[in-house]
Amino acid sequence: MKVFRSHMLICGGTGCHASGSIDVRKALVAEIAKRGLVDEIKVVETGCNGFCAQGPIIVVYPEGIIYMMVQSNDIPELVEEHLIKGRPLARLFYKEPATEEKIPTMQEIPFFALQELRVLRNRGLIDPENIDEYIARDGYSGMAKALTEMTPDQIIDEVEKSGLRGRGGGGFATARKWRTTRNAPGAVRYVICNGDEGDPGAFMDRSVMEGDPHSVIEGMAIAARAIEADEGQLNQVFSNIVINAAQAMPGGGTISISAESVALDSANAFSLPAGGYVRITFADTGCGMPEDVQKRIFDPYFTTKAKGSGLGLASAYSIIARHGGHISVRSHPGQGSTFDILLPAITQPAPRSTGIDTPVRAVSQGPKSLLVMDDEEIIREVASNMLVELGYRVQTCAGGDEAYALYKAARDTKDPFWAVIMDLTIPGGMGGIEAAQLILSIDPQACLIVSSGYSNDPVMSEYRAYGFSGAVAKPYSISEISTVLAGLHPNSRTSR
Image (cartoon, rainbow, N blue to C red; front, side, top):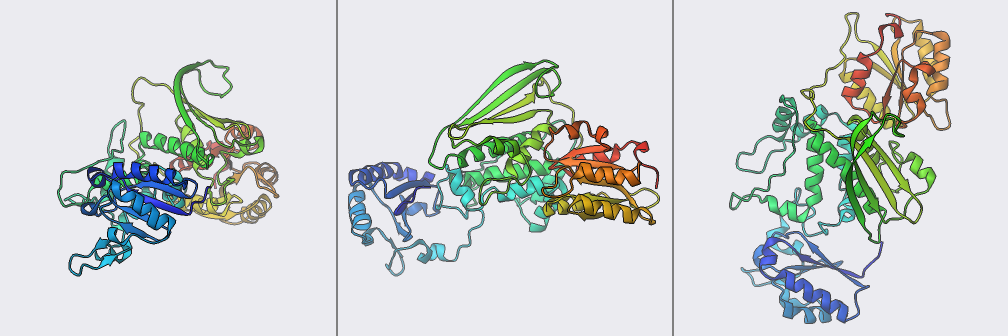
């Protein structure tokens, strides 16, 4: 990423636009070019700073100097004094009305000094149109956690504990709104962004949408997961792919998005049912990726980024699969990447459930015991939480050898394992297939479920041929694992 000596952040809020900030920005860009400073000074248009009466506003970093009521004819002097001579231009400082003191930084202005920013934490600090700047301030980390580690009920419970409310006059409780929507009957649920401007003096939605739009997108994606809105889930897929493309182009580039109708026959290469589909293609001009990375790009927790979570494309894969579609990638190092999504074409809304998970609860003899084998601690923890919520007793382990030992030890007790959920692949250790054979050698009626992020692995589709009773693709939701457990064939395991 290119490093600049100074960043000049000019407010691009509606108030500053009305007072001439567009012309000021043009004059600033032209003056910097005229002085030969293009490679040293970066001009960024931000959202509203919250001091509209003093606009146009420019903040210069790293010093944090704030200039008020800047006009186009101020620009040559401002560039000369501050950027070339290193002397802040005091005549454009804010002047405190009561004392007429000139204040150089925003943090020292009484109006801002006591403020603690939360919703507007990125106000005036980032380019609202630059996704990298949002991600650099932990953007989309909440969405990643909500989409891959939490069930809809857990998200709503967390929001309820936070006390989050709407910022309109009614202050409606967010959790109550989300829970009501999730439990309401109907074929389709929507997440709608409300840009209310009808309450003078109250919190303005415009400030967030202009100054930090990715926070709105992230919040809508979390809401979509909580209420199980398909439209929001697909928005999440598209956002994750665009984020990945943007990160592959640190020096800038182009993302091309296109869509077309296609017809697939029964012998198609994607193992999809024959019929009409919509193909959506995302192509970037980034760095591309080698073949070994392409093979693992949709694996949960796989990432090539130092601070990446490896959850974005994994969740995209899972969502597309749940919608009866297919996602794939084509790429060559240095030639960019192309993601292709196939989704079934429909002419009317598909029927859907009420959004309430149907749990597998304890049988009359008492809760059943399950064993979860996975080398990722976070997956073991999330799976355990889901299964406990469904009424099971759960034990976890990290590898096949330990799973076999635990199963063998529990087999002759009064509390044997009713089923085992097994990770297909354990790097450097015994995986699901080998462990399954060991367990079946001592208990041919063992109920074993294979789990993998490689949902296109032949073991996942032909699981019975390998001794498994069921299969579930990672990352899975509480409703998905509940359905797999509820659908186990009664003869797959002897009654305990």
